[in-house]
Image (cartoon, rainbow, N blue to C red; front, side, top):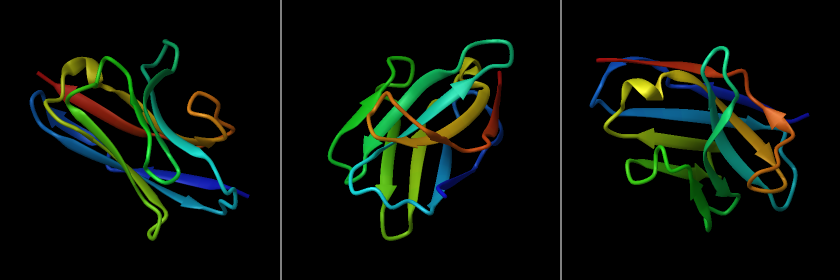
Length: 118
């Protein structure tokens, strides 16, 4: 059974940087994508970034493009998301996910909360 565990959330000031991590266990697919999504309570979950299993292809939402970086470390079974110049609108619960396509995920973590204060 695939399990995903996020870490790295917290309370920060606008303009700060934050690095979120996702530890993966039980994954046995040869090809897959991993992604980050976020959700503000009461709103729909939105896509943030995604990366192919080998790190060869990445995708970013316009909201974070240019100030974020997604990466994989297959040796450590982890995926990370670095967001720089955080804005108050980045405040959300961030979830990592795993699936067969960059916009199709069937495994999700429990989420880690990010609060950005002005």
